[in-house]
Length: 321
Image 1 (tube, helix red, strand yellow):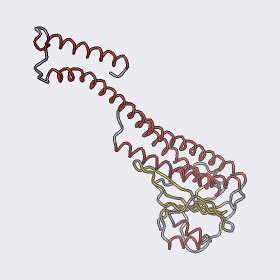
Image 2: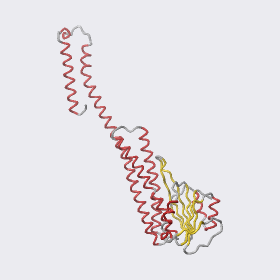
Image 3: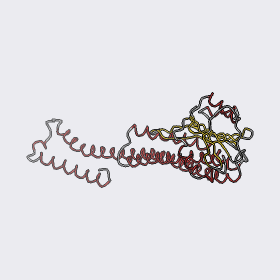
Image 4: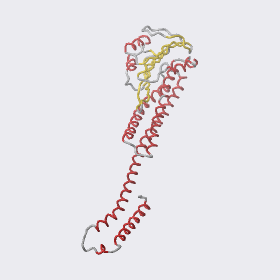
């Protein structure tokens, strides 16, 4: 069985390693088991089901990787699914952690989650006064650990978007950069969809009377709810920033194109003067008296220079050049 850790805790302290077997075990009032598994098989979950009386529907949900975050009640047990997330390049990868909570046991089943609970367990074991309060405090610690992993994802994406925004101000965005903006926007939208159910989970844990979750633990879950809502607000702002980066890039590109168009039009108008004059004198008519003028060549050149200079001055003053 892919057991990450399985220990019995007595009075908030680790007492002994707990071997897993299909035989149910009796726990004292001051004892509980904390078992952590990663990607178990159906047979391995069946062993835990027999040992701790887990509901069949909850076991099936724990083995699935397509569940939304939720809270369910099965007799004297609470069942919670929390969605995990981590970055893989520009993509947000998702997993889930299913939690079976009873008075004397808490079982976490991770599927696709990149963050193990090893450090969290060590942190809680360093505070026996919290572990002594029971499994609901362990449940809070795990969910809080999962939610705390959301903010670095948002901050990393935000840094990437701000870097693209800075680059956008000095140069055109390339096609691949525009594609990347839309990929990041899509990732943020999908992440936003995850946060809604997670907010509902934290709200239910805060406000509903659930088995194995005492009233004195609810302020801790209220703190988790605040964290989720803070991330929701940040993600909503980030989505707007990504949209504004693309819109601003589009406007700047149109502005640059307009500037270039005006410059080309101005130079075309200036060049039209010598082109027109040269065209007239290139017609080779016999009756063109000015062709016989001694200083006609220099007069024409001066006229061209004067007219081009006047046009250049006007366009320059108008901001076209």
